[in-house]
Image (cartoon, rainbow over all chains, first blue to last red; front, top):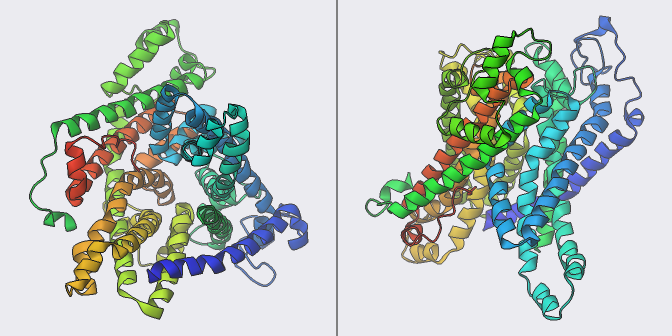
Length: 273
Length: 337
């Protein structure tokens, strides 16, 4: 029991911290120049592979570009990629989840079977299948992650819709002969939206990690662009000598994903309470 | 671990087995259908088979390819042929390497299975050790330990493997020089960093679910009964609650195995190890669709096998499930995790 209470207490502190961290990331997304006035693409070959110092707190990369500046300017690209992939996944998940949750029993049986099987396939393996079909590149990596995460969203949305459909207030509304569209708008949608917000918060963090993984594998964004995943991919070659090229972009991904996860869990706890 | 103490052997009812196999076939059929559409969506299959755009294939080669892949037949026939091929594990030839996909995968699979099995075992050890530490430490210390563990679990389950592995390389290979970063696969020391990289996120998840289950079991009447009989905390944990708490973790192991295969792609590229994951990455990069499809089919097959194994293990650990398995109340398990 004590462990559980300690865990909850920890969440109590962690959620505000996560919110502050995310606020900082939002500033980097909206106005990167405010935090890092330099040019993320400015090359100065003489300054290549400098370890972290006062002038370059995160060091410089192989062309002498400042890693801190690139990490800050990469926030917008990485956040945009995460949001786009999540939007695709959630959009598809909504269609499938609602069709399955509200549809006739035959449709539900067929759809939920398919959803469960696709959910069981490892996300990255499925994404690689889509990348092979679509061809590598930044756009298809976003689409691939969106498609690969859709079954998970569909599964959760279906479960939630079913749960609301079984509730007493929907039974009552039906008893009162409220029309089906009205039940949908007045009961099912409002009761699905909040869990969805929590899900999306968790999902964006995960999507950033997955798309970065594709970039890291050389299947997503190309190295010169300041995007966290492709910075990692560029740093992979120099990992023995220039560790800072890998450590700091990766840290940005971990911090963002952790903050989103903590906040997402806090939000979903709020639903349960 | 606790499994050996089960009262007697479990006879799996024939109907239970039949239901599992039926569910497994359903999974494979859905995957085969997905794969068929993926293949057709990847553009003109003939062009891809003959070596991509601008290939100089002669008319005989074109004719041979059309016959081999039945491209002149209606789509339904092609679909049925594809199902037959997958059922008999005839996965076709790699576009890029002109070798049977089954051979390519067969060569690489042992490397990846070794990584995955070792990583799953290590993840279990870490998760159980974490649960023990938290269960033993109570009071104010327990709180602090719980908070630290919780934080570690969140970071462990969120930290991407490509970064975690890179950090391990920096620490233990580049700075300290204790372990090799890239590996001739024969050297056992070269396995340490890849296995740890794969295991940590899984351990984070397993530890979270077993901790929650342990807390539930700790508050359950059977734990109170055991305490009232004068059993010590450690005894209650080992004989009663840990067994209960292992159930969700066991059923998660099927999912964990899939996640390990995902992870092996990243880990094998990072540590320059040969294996299924590396094959898959190279195939995706060169759009070698048959190889990717073969890997997906194999992963689905492995998943089905692992899920049946974990379901059987659950029956062994949890006697309550046996009654319902005998009555076939819960056959619906190909969709676990």
